[in-house]
Image: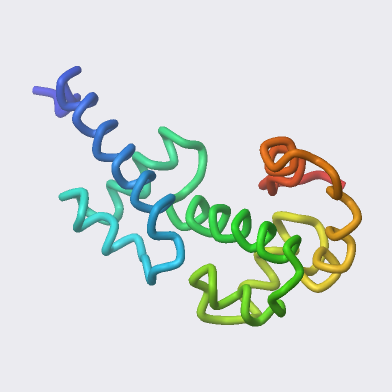
Length: 141
């Protein structure tokens, strides 16, 4: 007897994972944690984390932080908010954690990015600006 999921169960799990990813995309600024996401998907937190990583290549928490940093980059490029205001606007609760994650993904601290971003993407259409400024996880120097 095997516990291998059927094709129908695999499709249902993928649909649940897509709903979790869509929820993260929509509610990135809200307090979200893996347990809450798992409850919403009717999965255990461990199963959600394993399945999400298998499907999307990163954990739900990493995906959430990437979305938050992407939004933070856009807000910092705008230039009318301080780094602290941006931190809280994207749903982070700690400026230190935000700065650390931002630096990991972008390759520079948010304050430096804010200073350099004003001139770096000036004149680009927003769709191109978003693509060239997207944070890249596991960036190699």
